[in-house]
Length: 456
Ligand SMILES: Nc1nc2c(ncn2[C@@H]2O[C@H](COP(=O)(O)OP(=O)(O)OP(=O)(O)O)[C@@H](O)[C@H]2O)c(=O)[nH]1
Ligand SMILES: [K+]
Ligand SMILES: [Mg+2]
Image (cartoon, rainbow, N blue to C red; front, side, top):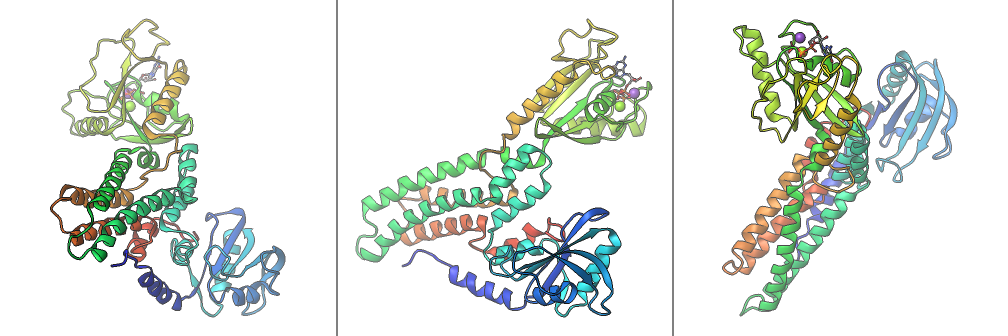
């Protein structure tokens, strides 16, 4: 019995996908007015389309200035750079071309319109360039996810983590795990082949078991570490407290802009209002909420309910008190961390002695220290983005499935027939293979690429 290998199936389906290849084109820079817009093409007609709108074709991989013309009437659209990037050494593995035009909306629209008039060229679907890169083996699924995260990264820690995954760090860890698993499988399967009478020799079985126990522990550790996944989402902070304590004023001070309405009327804030901040390189989502109090007002009551719910699900709650009216008691929250913050110290320097932080949203006093502390708390909760780990639910599900198969194998170790054991390990190996798309690449393509934008 051979160690499982589905690479031949994979090649068949890849070949099938390659046979019906259109040439795709899209603007790859952000939409709207800009100095420059980059339009990319990929597919068998990319060279011909480039000749048609920006000929003569430049030397491979050399940027050349060209008149960009509509091939239907030779009308000049713009003057820009043309690049010819023949496959298979291109980003998608296919023939590719780029034109860099001036970034006005009408220029981009006219250039794209001219390209779509070329035979065999159509608009790219969201993520289709990256998808083709994956199908051509230029990049695996986990690396494509890293690339998506890199495009979405808003803070330095998110960028560090994304670039690691885009460069293949997660794929490499998973591949090492898969090799360990395959090694253990080989011990079992060799025994099935060669000892008809007695099953797998005891030493080989024991060695396989040790290896699988160690692997199972490594995977459990990875599952237990949620930091990488949380770094993608951000650290959630809820500002809660009695009405008029200055919660909305604090949100505005942290955001450095007028996000929330501030008045001296208690019960001003009703909805939960969020701002995304970059605190020391970490993504922090701060939510302002309605002041917590008993109320008959149906709208305010709903606000209070939302405030309490947000505080419950936050990573950290800031309980804001008015230092001129100390003595409030923060509610019991299940939030991992709760800090008491005394506000308005510009008018009551001595108030609220129990506070962890003393600030004035009005003058800014104490805010630097609060922001620094929030950044540190976020860093502890999210990690620095320097460790390779589970970054999304898809990985978590695959690792959990591997973990379950390994547990089943290890629990039943002494009673399971060798063939059943080998089958469980093969399933675990396939589930690991799904992370990078060595197995079942088509199954995960939709899920992975649905979050990409057009032109990526
Ligand atoms: N002196 C002083 N006044 C402040 C400070 N922060 C807020 N205030 C004032 O306190 C009043 C209430 O401020 P808000 O920010 O609306 O308070 P809130 O906690 O959001 O109130 P609700 O949304 O009604 O629960 C306003 O008049 C603010 O100008 C501060 O640091 N010092
Ligand atoms: K208020
Ligand atoms: Mg408010």
